[in-house]
Length: 192
Image (cartoon, rainbow, N blue to C red; front, side):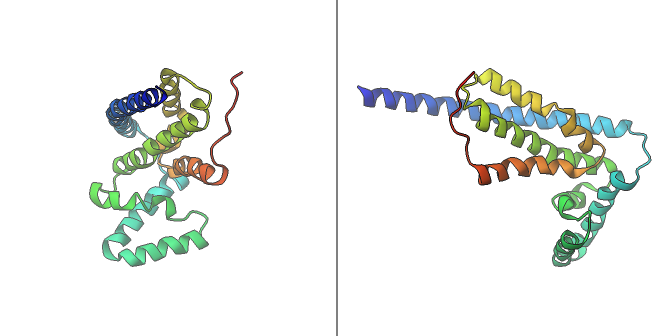
């Protein structure tokens, strides 16, 4: 009897996972589309004089893309050299430079690439972290977990630097994964 219940439970979980995966992919595509539309609207409305940090990484992206076009190995050596030597290295813009080769080096293309490559991934990373580290452990409902993900995705602290052209949000992708490597899963917490 126990074997039958366990098998039924496994089948139920597999069925729930099979239906959740397409919904998650669809939700991610809708979220990415909203991010692209909002970022494009924001950049189209900008009336800034770009200086120092706001233009610094944009300029680095353009420089690295140009370098990649002519000498890939040399560009990678440059990235490593700036990591060792410079206060503002080329490391955060390395994933953005190939996109600049494809989409161009306009401000719009630059900010959209940050929003899609880093912003969406950072929101997903933080939501997954919150879900795995806390919400599942506490037995939160599916609706509460979705609400948490949406709340994280709508945080201005996540999007303001992105919209002004700062790739700093890349740290929000890395930190949860480093936490898992160093800390591991949380022990079972008792609900209060």
